[in-house]
Length: 568
Image (tube, rainbow, N blue to C red; front, side, top):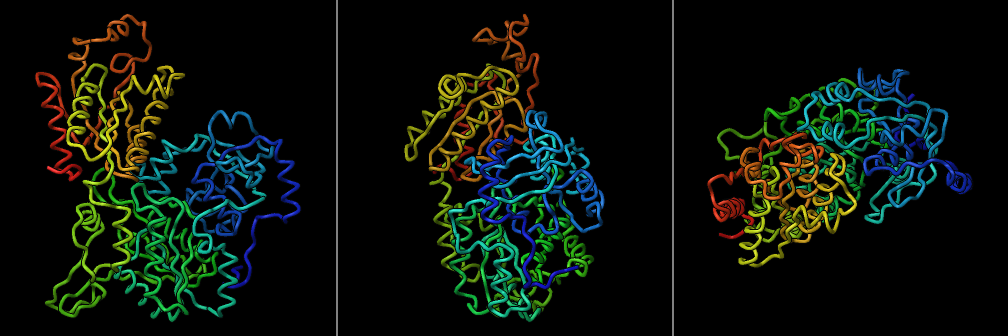
């Protein structure tokens, strides 16, 4: 049975008294520290946003969701909501046991009563849920390279909601929104889902959608996790607040949704519709390529642009929410106003600025016309995204031991310091090992930790407008990608593959390491007994054989100039 859109929805929280008692008892339970994505999922489980789920999915519910978008009892549910844990933690717990779920500060948020524990077939999950087992998809990469190997399922007892210190007045649970709609007497409400700042085309589109549906408008942006490289949610919310006064206050509301997006295209659109229904909405705008992650590794779009609209339209009656299809709005120069793309008068000049073009204009400090966006939005975006020549960035050298990475990195550092303007930090492998990673050995796991530490420090330097130069071996593609994602949320990441051949490196063997590796005295040595996965598409590839260091460093400088990171 579907609830009316203003009646309260069941939550998984216990009363305040029980919560205090449980918190005390849960102190002795084995505890799992939740990842940021798991905290988002848990919050929506507890507050009814993921109704009818009563907890993290059991193996049967997970299998049903993956194979045919339905839980074991036949309820429509398109995206798996599972608790992934490490092998070491999974070995310590078993079905029938309770565990405490804690946030990153160690606060107990909920208790999970484990009913299932299993090792999923992740390739199958990627294929069925996201349409392809392709690491270019952020959720597939997350599945294989970030998520733990074992899933735990079972009902949740909610103790307290995760704490948010930002935009508290803008965050509403499903029941808070339903109460607001009751109080305002809103019966028909259309939701606009977004993970981007709002520009004039979005305003036209939302006005039209609300008018067509004869409904009130809820701007419902996602502030949990979106796609790596998206504009951070602090900037986006400031942009939404800046344009709110362009909307009629009596018929529009802004509320933030703490959802961890998977960028799962059609299935994700259906998931969004179910979540919006739980928040008391009656209509939902579904866009072209809704929640699409962009291009796959063949350079084609992951999903057909209209697949999301088709899937939601097919199930809208069952969910109990009506789909409003997103009209692409374009600016017609002669009429000085926006039109849906299929209603443009013949022979008119259509103006449009793509997301890529907008980023380029911000990066290069170029004009962004008033017809495209609101001056107050552009002002917010410029504050967070200054021209490239004023932003921090990271140059990340990777290559075999002895390939010449450190030498080129040193030369580059000196050249950048000579130019001045930004602080430059060299994070050399040996120096980092001495100060940050002295307790680590050279096993695959330890080398991985070391690279992630370097990446973390580089991301902090980049975030604060400095230049980080890193020169580790970094043999594994997945780790380099994780570092790239860490840094690209703050500035540019330039991967430089120092492609000196193993023969040449071994001939140089300055530190005598290759000799020791050949004699078996060094285990897991990159290039000899352990693989080096060469980058497929680095920003730059240099070969040090027969070229001098100065020339190699100069190539990096030219690359930085062509990217607008340093002024020519």
